[in-house]
Image 1 (cartoon, helix red, strand yellow):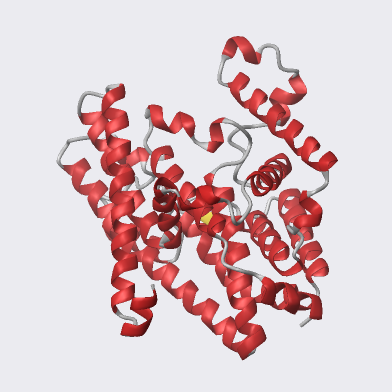
Image 2 (tube, helix red, strand yellow):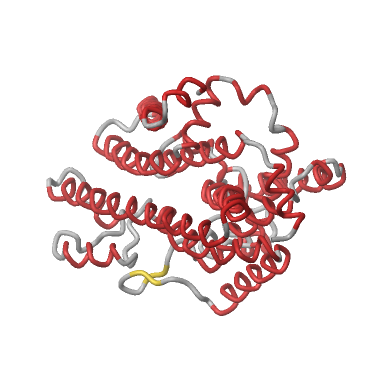
Length: 380
């Protein structure tokens, strides 16, 4: 392990901003997955090129590199790698349980004729005629029901990360270069994972791995340190890019305003180009992260505010909260399409969902503390 990497890992201190980011991503995933919901007009994807998925993948890469990089330093790489693979198994187990219950709930709703069109909408056509086939394909990640694609993506990315971590701890720049090379090759040759029968994954793991490795690279190299943030010209450049991205995204929402955009912008920048992680999407996320970490330092007193603490708690228990958010988004969508889809109802459904996610996060955190020794519980 490089001495500089050891020093960066040893110097890292708890950063609530990481969990805040995961919490925001979880809340955004929930409201973004409810169509025709006025609240999802406030999420990140409506003001630039990146979205909640970028937050998830980058921050998970950053956090995993810190946690298991330290473990590799203290207990050896083999131990760290096996702990990551244990995390992969937990992700897969969570996905399987969520997949089975999720498609069963959708099939039940459709069979009761409450909303039969959701079978096609949620990408599980054939569930009523061939339930066993759908189940088996889901177990081998060949099905991609709507709203489960992000969790599905995290399984191969996390399984790949032990190999990336080995390189990051020894040759971080070379490892990042190899990751970028794989990203470019996947975009050039059209590599992607396939789903049944002739579809491709919504998030291409060959491309999205670069964002996760990039998060790990920032963690082990300390590239997000104070020296970089103090470059005023770089902050100005990032700010201009963010404002330009916001203007383009907002103008695209309006047919009248989009007529003023040059053809090269209209044809070259797609707001839905998330499959292969478009380069301008990566740049947008990095610019946003750069400005955000400058405006909100790790010791910012605002991070102690009760509303933000609730979001942070949802980030600390991100996997369980994500699984709950998937069901809540389905329930919210069902409520809105079978009832009066009024703005007040959309806001109410969103607020109830936020409250439920937060309650689950606090319960899981409390439950974990009960398994700790009494001395640790008292200190907490």
